Image (tube, rainbow, N blue to C red):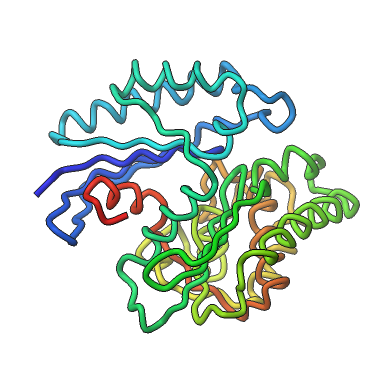
Length: 306
């Protein structure tokens, strides 16, 4: 048995999973998420903001302490969209090495898609495939088709943080801002359809915080509950309704929603819009919501399953 730590550093959040791997069995010991908004302003400036780097460093110092306390044998950290796009990513790499003691892997969109697919489908029945995994991040969205392995994938630069910073600037967003964001998403998804035959999928799986938050709202939860959200189902009609409601709300109204993480308040409208457009343009009647995602894929990769 090997005790591993997986760290996923995205545009909006940084997450830690410590798990024991025994052959093909993964037993989770600790999960944690911090909203650090590493990608703050990257779409506009092309560089990682010093304040965002400091927020990330503080989270990693805490994560390193957790790993030491739990006796982790191996650690893998990956960084995705915001870091791929940043000219000063060498500053980020040095920061991680000092705080966590490992060198982060700045992975490509295709690598991100493969890890997300592994994490989302590891415990599912292949008979329910082919699976279409829709992973909505802060800076990018990955769509992956496959059953036991990736058959087609595409990563496009539409995510909840990027859309918000580009278009959804008013409180609440104006009709013109929403239309511009929608056009941006549709253009990105058109690129996906060129290479991912989504119509072949038997089961669609939605991943990441935007999707799970929309699921929590659809379920009417009094507080965020990962167990109830995991493997719940979202219909296209529910997603359309909730997306419209979120985009019509002020920031204060979104913050008052019981399932809303404070770090998602300002970007959830953009994330929901990506999900709504994906379901509409890909003809998805429903998505299965998964709490297992790229973080699980990273952990499994340490043990050789991804």
